Amino acid sequence: MLYLSTRGHPDRKHFCDILLEGLAPDGGLYLPEHYPQVDDAMLTRLRTAYHEQGYAELAFQLLSLYIDDIPAADLKALCAKTYTAEVFGTGEIVPLRHLEDSLWLEALSNGPTLAFKDMAMQLLGNLFEYELARRGEQLNILGATSGDTGSAAEYAMRGKAGVRVFMTSPHGRMSAFQQAQMFSLQDENIHNIAIEGVFDDCQDIVKAVSNDHAFKHKYKIGTVNSINWARLLAQVVYYFAGYIQATEENHEKVSFTVPSGNFGNVCAGHVARSMGLPIDKLVVATNENDVLDEFFRTGVYRVRGSADTHETSSPSMDISKASNFERFVFDLLGRDGARVQALFGDALAREGRFDLSADPAFADAAARYGFVSGKSTHADRLATIRDTFQRFGMTIDTHTADGVKVARAHTTPGVPMLVLETALPIKFAETIEEALGHAPDRPAKFAGIEDLPKRVQVMPADADVVKAYIARHCD
Ligand SMILES: *Cc1c(COP(=O)(O)O)cnc(C)c1O
Image (cartoon, rainbow, N blue to C red; front, side, top):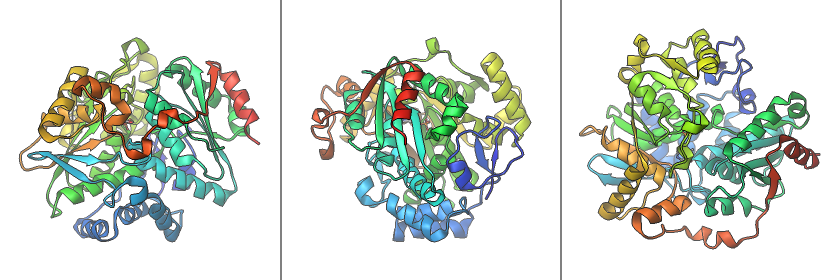
């Protein structure tokens, strides 16, 4: 399998080359040349693999369709090492829980940092370690986080040979639990950098460092953000695992609702559906930052300015643009790289928006690709958390609540609707208290985490200071 850029660059690459790379050279995102098709017999084999050998085997069989430059035995071992009951809490790895009628939750948040990002990041950590050792190379990951991405990356890379993590976050702005999760790590290869500023300042620093090509090259700077194809690919697996658990026969259909920000999670659903998995609808749930809901309702994609980007109680969905959305638009427009370049490279840079409402392809988003959308607000979130607790005795997190709220508007009788649970409530305890009047349960392994010694450097919002720190800590 070879990979190409969404903006039409002529190069074709293998999986391990794009694993360690960010954007394609023309600024596009990587996608496979085609989506391997899963027919009835293959789906039956995958079903058996999941039931009899478990999630790791399902992951191995699906990843094998996309990765031809890692020997099968090695890939199998990497999957087996990643997806264990010890790391993810249950043998099913992503168990389903029933809410009402056709509505289910698919639990993706029982990994080390209690958010779905562990599902992909844990595999990425093992892939990086494997590939860097094979090449005899090192990688210094520089990132910016407002919470979930940074902790998932640090827990995936801690103690890994050949990798260091430099993670910037806005000083004093993450929840106490999120700060404790990251800053209590004592591993030598993990560096927490608290920036005196907001999240955008952290992102600007990462951009400034990445744009200094000499520095980037000398210090082997890389990223782990959600545009990484390997992360997206790892996420495809749990759409299959959800489908297999919710159905007994291959012709049955299932829908998914996905609390969305950068469109990474639901884009994996689009890939699974494009492979032939019988998915009816893919429901994109947004919070007040409704860039994606606006597109799927109107055909207009409009990037928000910082004054228009709201700080909400589902903060991991607070985005001004959806960085993986380009992948879907590439498929929607018949894989026309020149048009994607004109939209994402030119129109967005010039006007901050583009409009596909008059394009016949826009109707295909729903009719051909199953996409629909909806939006949820702070009041919806509180009401949904309260209602879910009162009726089912279950506490759900704020992002998952956005999903449940939006899913209810799109259910079809007889078609299971799986809402992806993207985090556990303890990560967003303040809003849970606001909704329920009491704090959510805390998993035993996180007892007293706020009292552990913290390992963090506070720095001004100055890229040069961050560069000097990186230079001092790389040999
Ligand atoms: C990252 C994240 C999201 C958004 O996922 P995308 O892939 O960016 O769409 C939703 N919920 C939680 C809890 C997250 O951490």
